[in-house]
Length: 119
Length: 110
Image (cartoon, rainbow over all chains, first blue to last red; front, side, top):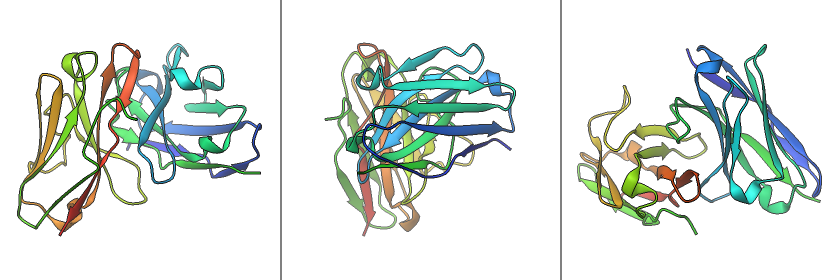
């Protein structure tokens, strides 16, 4: 069965970086995009960016350009999302989700990773 | 401020039919497919409707989606207590060159 399993919760200080992983299983890793979506406490969903595991191509939300980097390791079917220069407003649950297209046609989601930015 | 506009809340009694709207523009809903997600408290979003009006397998036919012009709607008929959740619409935005979400609608079953 399709599964996306994310790494555990993180607590970081302002200005630091965080790297969250998303390990895929149960399907051909390179056949689906992986999107990252975040949700601040009590808030709605916000698209962070996406990566094409096949060639590694990425696209990021304009407001996060320059601070977010997505990579993948095809040998372990794992995608990574790194966010740098963390601010308190980056505190959120970060979800990875699979999609057959560049749009948010996300059919399977990870369990979410809480990233807390606090001094 | 979300690109797509949803009412912050909606409510209904068991058995009723409720609709949740999602308003956008020509650069997003007007030219692209709409997706709907259900998020139960403390869980990841779950796909409910894809490509405007298609249900993934396992989603009851009580849930239906529609789109007209630059607006979309999610309808839930035969409301049940387990439908109490947050609902989000999403689509692609040609101007932003990326996906956008609505602000979410909290559905309460009275």
